[in-house]
Image (tube, rainbow, N blue to C red; front, side):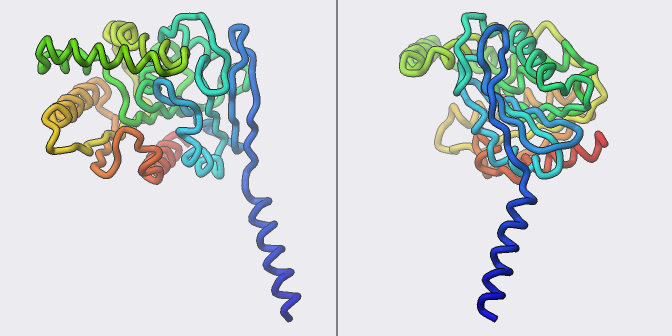
Length: 274
């Protein structure tokens, strides 16, 4: 009886293993550079994860693993980030979006319904891609995304001295990070300028998850969250079908601190697309 129980336990264990989808980590040549890609799961729509500035695909590991159980998923390290090769091509939204399109073509998913999930700066990329290639996207999930108006609004509440200190601190910190990270951060002003020139008109389902977690003892952080909330609602007026989900439990990296919130948002978009 004991041996039978052990055999049943082993059978259950290996049966569960066989049910899990296998991930495929590989490299694809993009613009003459080797780009690291992780595909996981099968089916449609295809979920494409776009990490924030300086972050690699590991930011979405928990979420991607769960979503891969129900459909095909793709995450990647942008050129110059993570395991991907450094590029000398400027990190403009035009270039980054073109590189992403080339990647998706080589993964043979162009023409298949796709849902982009963009975090922080990845939200910039997702929005610009939607503007440039509107027929390629079926849905969008934005996780505490960047706003092209945030920097100018923050400058309004800062003194010249505070601005100087902030800029000096950023420049000092950038010297400590890899070149690819530096290139992405330095591209932010250009991203802001680019997005201010476009207007997204779409009827695809969109969900935006915002972090309202704030240190009440930090006046600047309180104002930052207030401004960000207002900007997100301004964006919602541009795309009124957008669902806005707020959380006070997570900071900027909602996908790491509250992965279930992101997973459920993606699953809901999938049901709306199917």
